[in-house]
Structure formats: structure tokens, C-alpha cells
Amino acid sequence: MRILTLLLVIVLGLLQYRLWLGQHSIADYIRLQEELRTQQASNLELEKRNRLLKADVTDLQQGLEAIEERARNELGLIKQDEVFFRLFSQAEPGKTFND
Image 1: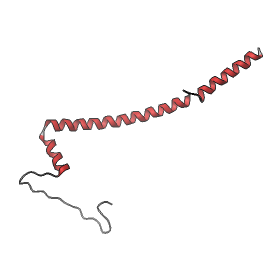
Image 2 (image 1 turned 180 degrees about the vertical axis):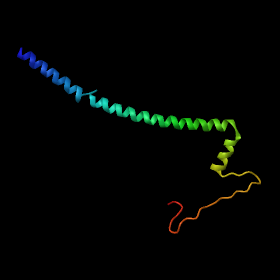
Image 3 (image 1 turned 90 degrees about the horizontal axis):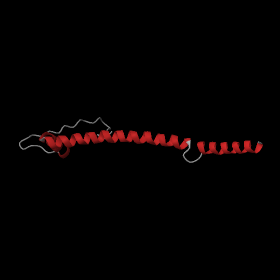
Image 4 (image 1 turned 45 degrees about the horizontal axis):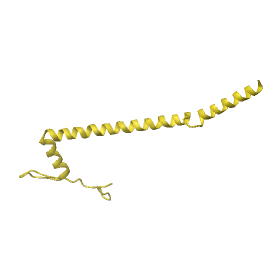
């Protein structure tokens, strides 16, 4: 009877070791849960970016206003017979525009 009890205690100890420290343990489970939360947050950011890009594509496909706006903002293009003014703010003494 004493040998059986000793054997059961050893088996229980081995199972506890595997549960807490072995492969697929609780520590692994917690680490994987954290990785899952991180990946889900990343996916949300990427979905948001994809929605914005899809809206841009739709705007560019539907009308010339979006194309004209991009040409003006990104390429600095102006229409024929149009006057273009560029305004600069004055920097404080001792500061540059990059500060």
C-alpha cells in the first residue's frame, strides 16, 4: 500500500510539473494569449488602414475632384491661367522651421 501511495505521489508530481513548466503549460498558454491580443490589435490597425485606402481608391475611380486634389497637394500642379501663392510663416529669432 505504501508503494502505491508513493507511486501516485510521483505521478501527481510529474503531472504538476508538466502543467506548470512543461510543453503546453499554463505559462505557454498565457504567453500565447498575449500574442493573440497583440496580433488582434495589429489587425484592427491594418483593417482601419485598408478602409482608408479603399475609400481613396473609390474616390479616385468616381470623379476628377479627388484626382485634381491629389495633383495639387502631392505634385504641386496648378491649372492654366491660375495664380499660385505660397505663404510662409516667420520663424522666431533663433528657431528654424523644423523646431
